[in-house]
Image 1: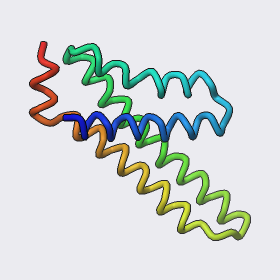
Image 2 (image 1 turned 60 degrees about the vertical axis):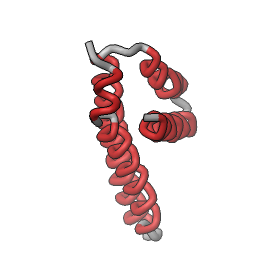
Image 3 (image 1 turned 60 degrees about the horizontal axis):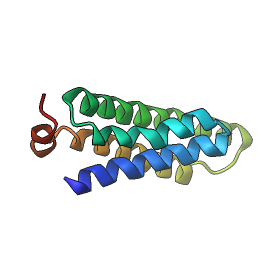
Length: 110
């Protein structure tokens, strides 16, 4: 249980760091506040956290595509950046999928 929550927390902090680099403080605050929904033990809060993880994974994929296009246009190497961002997207997706486990669903029953 703690591992699943920790993975989500790491994913949220990584996305928050991305938005901080972009200068979007509102989204940084949202990323850092989202894990607080774990304290509210209702089924809908778990559902919201899963949706946020999936949206975050999609965000990482969009960032990877944008970065690859930019690097290709500039003639710079792009494969390592794509692999790193793809790994972060998979990690974030995994964090969301693990929130659907039986142990978590039991704890967040209506």
